[in-house]
Image (cartoon, rainbow, N blue to C red; front, side):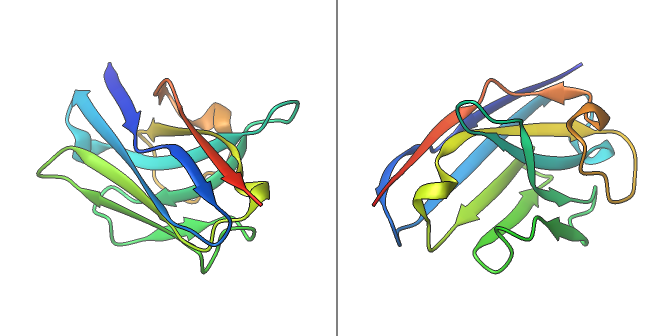
Length: 124
């Protein structure tokens, strides 16, 4: 089992920035690729970003590419999502998730472990 706890959400004006954190515990963190997903009210959970086990490879949804940056610190068992130039359409609950497999995997069902989520609200 891997336990994940997100933090850093909040209310921000359009154009602002937030940094989300996800703290992991349990099994060896560096054995897992990590992803961020988000879910807005009435919508499906959607992929945001993914980072490989070593942190050397990242992948982003088109809607956030160039604005969001995913990173990880395996020594601290943590993954981060720096969100800049936020837009009202970024408003959602953001989840981090762990995937034991390699590759570009963007489907929520591919991820074995999930955090409880943190709310991000962007006002216009």
